[in-house]
Length: 423
Image 1 (cartoon, rainbow, N blue to C red):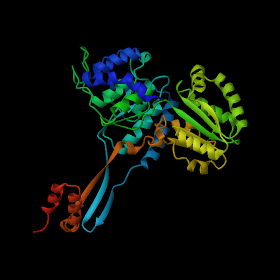
Image 2: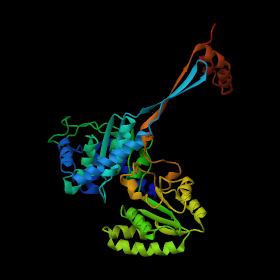
Image 3: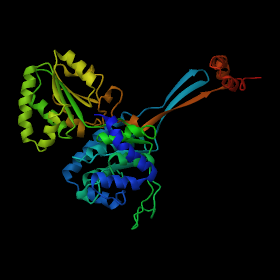
Image 4: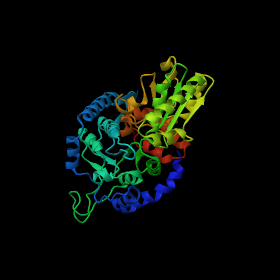
């Protein structure tokens, strides 16, 4: 995933949105997506109607996904930590949610209401007061995001949704738009209501979304550069080749750029998986997309000497999703250092995590799991220190502070301490 190469394509879009607001985003959407969206704000009536028309089975699945996600993310809330450094001197760290977030929900080759859940739940658990969801407009749905995405927003109580995707959506979230025309939400002359910029943008997307997030990091906080999906499977001879093949295919159906990698010390398993992949691909719906992903340079079967060497390979690869299907899988999984999420054993496939495990499926890709984490409550909060010393505690440490101020040739720092000393 060469995000740097994609930067060249997204930089003009981002700069245009910075200068011209939604007018530039609208132009990019028309040019790239073939949809003209005069007003990006999705009407409340459309969100309500989408929920009313939602398949009851899908509604039940989304509600359970939300319930499980709230359980897991609820345990991530940080507690205020107060430390008494000395008598009369404390440092307290409190955790404060950011004011406003922008949540990106993809809408390209598939429909991702699950990404609404994964973005919104941790933000709400964190206590974020203002949430805006963006998702690409769909020509077949009158330029609105897919109705299942809108229905998921309704289930979560999110009513600020914009029909815009790609790099232009990330830029619009970062810079906002002052609005024009009818401030209540657009009018016949093409005016739009103001769009307030956000503090943090999260959510997965294609390589251009990842590039826009990299470009705008600093203007906004981001979760990670979540680009085309990846799965690595570390498996030994005991793994079921049909299961392994199914899991490789499940990620390949996301995108022709998706990466599916099997790492195994068993040539017999590798050969059996090859046979199963050929059989299962022929029966799957998105044959062309899956075939392109599995035959691309990003996908492979890697033969290793043993599980120990396999661990070295998957730690170096730092996959978004890693399945460990080996003997004593939990012990092996505990030794993984670099992965967005680790799925342990034969009954914990990536698909479970995509929807209803309770974990978050917005995860770092492109080897960034070496230093980045998946989306969580932490993505939406910031730590703030409160330093409180009384006169005696300050007097006691004053000589040390003034010595360091002198060593750094910052005498005014020392003077600020001296001014508070008893006379």
